Amino acid sequence: MTQNIYQQLGLKQVINACGKMTILGVSSVSPDVMQATAKAASAFVEIDRLVDRTGELISRYTGAEDSYATSCASAGIAIAVAAAITRGDPACVTLMPESSGMANEVIMLRGHNVDYGAPVTSAIRLGGGRVVEVGSSNLAACWQLESAVTENSAALLYVKSHHCVQKGMLSIEDFVQVAQRHNLPLIVDAAAEEDLQAWVASGADMVIYSGAKAFNAPTSGFITGKKQWITACKAQHHGIARAMKIGKENMVGLVYALENYHQGQAIVTAEQLQPTVEAISAIRGLSADIEQDEAGRAIWRVRIRVNAQELGLDAREVESRLREGDIAIYARRYNLHQGVFSLDPRTVAEGEMALIVARLQEIADHAAD
Image 1 (cartoon, rainbow, N blue to C red):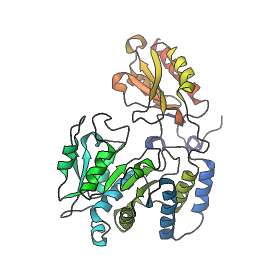
Image 2 (tube, rainbow, N blue to C red):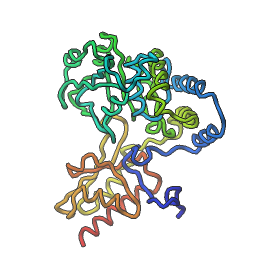
Image 3 (cartoon, rainbow, N blue to C red):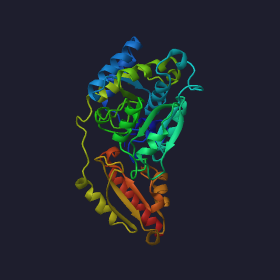
Image 4 (cartoon, one colour):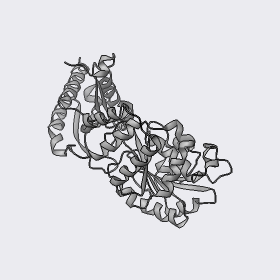
């Protein structure tokens, strides 16, 4: 069997069944996009003009007034927060992330204060922001959001993510109304979202996406929104954004990935996953069904429940053995404490789902020894 580039470097083969995750390199970039990236890497360009042109091209897809390419979505959060605090003032930009004496409070829901591999609060603080939480972990009211606004408020932040609490939270419409009523910018962290236009159309001022997740771009992200605020984001290039800059080749790769978005990308349906569900359910100690993405996206996954008493292993042990085999198989492990893990088919290559089923069978067989 032909080894991939990472195996040639002495690393394990990986089967990614957990989705577009940073810990596994996020996504698989198409040859056409990588060809454009390689061509961009081999030539010189006026970077400031490329930044502006990239923003114009991204905005064609988002419907926003302007956009700004970043190294990743986390950088986008930090830059957007710095833009909200400094409003692009050069003297303030050079001080970031030291924002003492400035309106620097970023208001967000407690149920949106998540860790996606790093705390979202870290990105906010990198931009000079001080976090103000609203509501309880599982319930928030609009009056709480309203009452949190003071003269020290710099922005509102709305996080759209499967990591967030999905019940009892305020809607984006609530955030838009409060932001507009108090003349504050609304930042939306839509890192893994697939709809390029909905969040801009909602009335948000700065919307942050990962280029490498839904859009299968090289490592990148972007902020898209109102011209005033994107200009303030670009100003951060002379401050904190210098340490987060995206290269010319990845800017070009991002544009080409957006151009190719949805072209030839097959959506795996629940019906297509049914044979896998049946094969796993036939293994002793395991049962499987189909679940939809936690955040309501049209993404379907295979959910596997482990009967620890019957198998002799609990879900944590099964998932661990998947990762520790000759081929490292990564599953979604957020609900291991409930005896459950899941398989995301979007990042599973042809023939790999059969390898996962075979490995589960092998684990079950050895557990019986």
